[in-house]
Image (cartoon, rainbow, N blue to C red):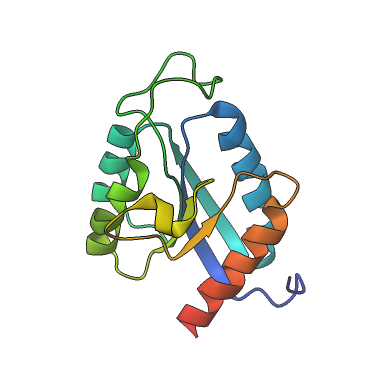
Length: 150
């Protein structure tokens, strides 16, 4: 982590793509805790399904996208529950994300290993859904993001 007086970025725009409300909020809290140490102004948007994320990606540029691997096509009324019908759609957004802005840093969220995903294009980094390790993982992601920007 960096000293609050030495912020590396003036502004960062982040998109969280996560269909579970609890995890959406956990990710937002983690981002606010960690990434604000690296920037003066932080803008966070959320999408809870593939279609909403696709629209946001198409019309907005983001510096960082936290992208869940598995999600529904459309919003679900009971987004609190993890056992809804979901599909491995999230990472299918990566080509559109990179087409819109090749420098967008995509942090994939998955419990699967890279070789198990079978996806054409993988995110820049993959983290798991482990709230105890989230801040560590986000800090590690920021270190990777900085390496790519320097």
